[in-house]
Image (cartoon, rainbow, N blue to C red):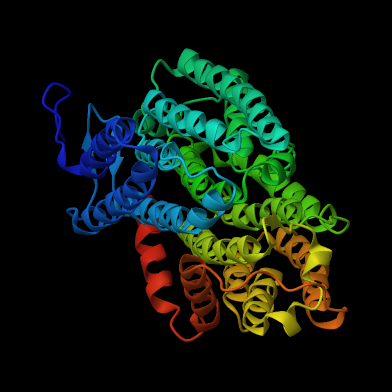
Length: 492
């Protein structure tokens, strides 16, 4: 443990690296010519992410606290940060062709992603509510600008404005909740709050419950869980497609890590108070994601509702962790981490396919535009079919095992009703995934999509497809890493 005056900087090396390189690349981009700046900053951003990933892997094992116990690094933080870096690098790779085609290839795009990643890292490693809020706002401010990055598009400007207004509302709810927690406890450090609420003589006042509800509501907004999902469909549809791809993975992973740490660490001893809230949000998200997507015609809006449903499934693991049978808490978080890892590859692969859907200078976003894809581009049709089957949870693909682990954890912990609702909504949700497959293979062919596909998109499609198909044969590495990460939250 380090002192606040001379903090131990080793656990913070990835954050320091990203902050320094973000500022360096920003200054470099300002002084270079525009045509030279964009590719140089893009490669510089990818190198920064790669170096940060390597540093994460070689950091000393075990828990490290620094900056007056406001920053923590352990196996859980490293696991979630690694997922954020993977998704951010893939988003940068997928964006190049789209940005060039729409004359948006400005170097600021990559700087904003790096700053958003820095905010996500702060969120994941925050060990008190002030550090958490700083990371949350740094990420959010970057995302607001990214959502409206296509300045000539009114839809993009509208998406950024909606995201900003609702994001400000969520931040206000969060701060008010934290204020109530501080007022009743006198502290905002996660470890202190865990011990404080664990006192057998402590009686939970109504003010703490209200503060907890406000914090959960704000965090539910960040992961677009129902009923705080209202921003997601419009922002997904209006934002540039590479930005939507980024929104669908990296910020969600960081927010999932945040809600896990906030619920398990400071409020771990108040599981009875917040379990029912998480169960309600999980059910609402699964039901909304299953039924609201059925009539969607725009594939980006469909993916927004799909992501809401997937968040509902993932939250089942958090509900398990709050249950009275503490021996299953680790299993619930482990299943949650496995599910979100699989979701990352499914989502990236799907958005890579969406970015391949273009004819001339026009992006095709309507689901009907996929008709006859199997005849025009059988390879892309095959990959998209595999991804849709996996999202529907059809065996033996990775998506099936993700849901299997979640349902198994819920049943073992006694949440059988929640698991049954999850299975039923999964069956309903399979309808719109299979409808896409039907359009691809059984409807009359439309005009061919542009070819060849950009090498970056081919790479993302290849990696995503292989992961989804081969997970059944080599699941152990992901499951083992998720187990180690989950155990870091339960040191006792």
